[in-house]
Every structure is written in C-alpha cells, then in structure tokens.
Image 1: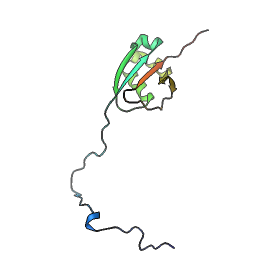
Image 2: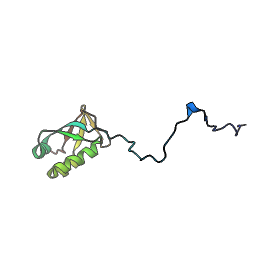
Image 3: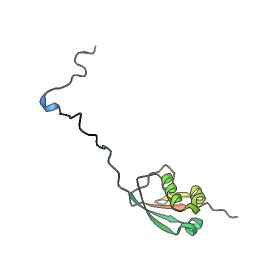
Image 4: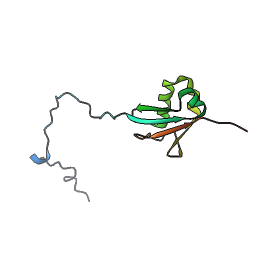
Length: 114
C-alpha cells in the first residue's frame, strides 16, 4: 500500500529552495542556434542553372529545408531542385535527414536516357 502522506513531499530546507522573483521580466530561454556552413555541389542541369558548387550558411535544417532555401535563392532551379536526389558521404539521404555542420551535400538532378 502506498503511503499517500509521504508521496510528493517537498524538501523545504534552505539548501533545497531557490528564491524566484515572479515580477522579473521574462527572458528568452531558448538559445539561438548558430548557422551551419554547408557546401552544396550540383550536377547536370542544376550545375547549369546554379553553378557547380555553393557554400551556404543556414540555420540547422533538414535536406528539404535546404532545398527550399536554395529554391528561394535560385528560382529558375525550383522544379529541378524539387526532383533532385540528395547525397551525403556517398549515400543517398532522405529529405528528413538533418544537414550537418561543415557538411557536404550533393544534389543530383533526375536523368533520363536510353
């Protein structure tokens, strides 16, 4: 049987308490994250529109958000960016993958041939 009188007791000794000024102005508790520096390489039609390589400084983001950022900077490449595949460390990665600091992302446009 649980002793309900002892459950959730607060230790009100001086060492366990902390004075709080409830009238103090609120301050932001979440730290702003530093921008990530990412090298993005392009191939095929993407390289024709954007260039072979760009260095991008973005807030921590996913590959999907990086694509959106690139599309805002290079509107002519929006459709190709949307269809491209992302590669990091020689592996295909999904749009939900987080972009790493000082990372390198390669965007491969769709290809067709016969």
